[in-house]
Length: 285
Image 1 (cartoon, rainbow, N blue to C red):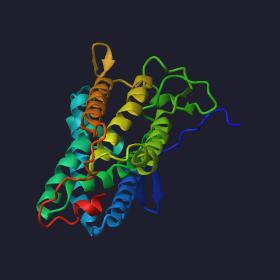
Image 2 (image 1 turned 180 degrees about the horizontal axis):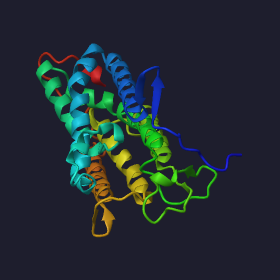
Image 3 (image 1 turned 60 degrees about the vertical axis):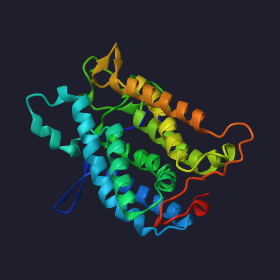
C-alpha cells in the first residue's frame, strides 16, 4: 500500500543536449490524442479525416493563445511588474475557458469556409477534448501546481516546500486535484461516446459538445473548490468557481430546453447542411 504519491523532482526531461519541458510535452500529447480521436469519429461519419488536421492547424494555436490570455487576465496579479513572464507558457498557466472558446471559434470559422458540417464536427471533438485535458493535467503534476488542500489519504500528493502556498509551509501532502480532474475527464469522454447516445437517443447533432461543456464544468466546479493555490476571488469564491457554475447552469439549461419533448418525431441530426459540406444529415446520425 502506498502512503502518498511522490512528485517528480524536475519538470523537464533531458535527451542529450535537448531539454523537454514536461508541461509542454503533456499538452502536445493531449493535442495529438484529441486530433486522432476526432479524425476517427469524423471518418466514421463519412468525412475525410484530413479535414480534422486542417482545422487543428488553426484551432490548436488559437486555443493555446486563448487559454493563456484567459489565465493572464484572471490571474494578472502573478505578472504585475514582470509582464514578460506572461509569455513563459512552459511554466504553466492555461485557462481552459479561453482555450475552448478561441479554439472552437477559429475551428468553426475554418470549417465554415471549407464547407464542413459544424454540428457534426462538434460531436466529433466532444470526447476528444476531455481526453486532451486529462493528459494535459499531468503537466500540473510535473510542475507541482494547482493541487488541493491538505490530505492524509493514501493518494495524497507530496509537494516540495518550494511549491507550497503561504500558510501550508509545514504541510507535506495535498489532494492531487490534477488526478481527480484527469479521471473525471476520461470518464466524461467514455460517457459521451458510449452512454449519452443510448440514454438520450434523440439528442440533436452537435449537442454532445454541450454535454461535454456541462460535464466538464460540473467536475471542474468541485475541483476548484478544493484548490488552495492563490487566485482572484469574487464574493469570497474563486473566479473559476463562478465561471464553472454559470457555464454549467447555461449548458444544462440549454440541453433541457433543446431536447425534443414528448413524442416529437423529429430526426436526430435533422439540421440541413449547406451545399458542399463533407457530411450530410443522414451520415451525421
